Length: 374
Ligand SMILES: Cc1ncc(COP(=O)(O)O)c(C=O)c1O
Image 1 (cartoon, rainbow, N blue to C red):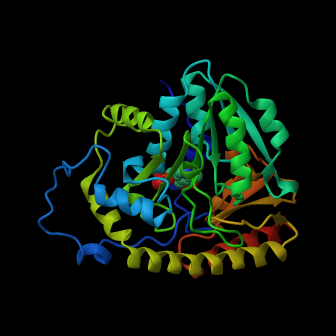
Image 2 (cartoon, rainbow, N blue to C red; image 1 turned 180 degrees about the vertical axis):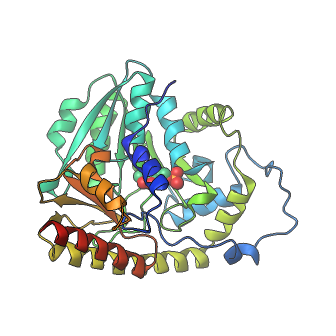
């Protein structure tokens, strides 16, 4: 299977080469350091795999169901620990969708299902989110798209990059439509716990027996480098098929990732980390919002959840050109062009990273750029 590079990754590769001094794209909380965990790590931990379960460390799976509110509908038997949300999405898509099948994916959204669906030889239908509707999509379009061939509806909830959240009534409506044709519904919930003015994001795995939730410790806890995430579903055949496929990729989880995530998801630590991440993200989001409000060059639907948002560019330049100019001196600033999501007249900004100064520095450079153009 040959997978096409998606534009988001292309942009990241270019930006890494340019090595900008600052950025306003961060999508995760300020990362902890190893020293934050050393006191709780067992020095005698054997660095083979845990040999306890091919589904991942049982104590970690239990913490996932508790911390992310999958309990009591889902138990630890419904959880597979994976190498991040990315691997969980990969395993689910690869197992559910085959050549000639149809899948429905929200856009703008996470690009992974678009390129994987195409590589598999499936027909990928893009469910278009609408900015003038707060980035919600139209249920009429979804109904039109669903056929007997639909195997999977993949939604990013909370949505990357718009910060829109589908509520429980929306999700139950989608489940009802999917159930009529036996389709699975996967919601990528990696930004859960960063809701600003809506209830906590509902968990798809608790709403539907062919529902799948994916997530990880990457964003809100800032532990992306651990590569530790999960797939939660009540479909145990899908979980089994996933460990079979995983045997040919990463085989088992990395024990250090599991051990540290297991500590990070202890109730007291988790609550404190979420509180800290939310405080800093809220401050940064307020700064971004003030910036947008005081610059006619931009407008946005402030994200309802998550750490990132999509700003409309009210200037006569496309986002690729804007982002490329900003990457160079004197700005040396990274923003994510909306073109990476198929939205050439937008830029994506982020409130993660934890450091207020960084965002201020980044916004200052963006301000200079707009002033130079005026
Ligand atoms: C919506 C979404 N899904 C998945 C991922 C990958 O996350 P992980 O580190 O958990 O694999 C990201 C990372 O940016 C993301 O934004």
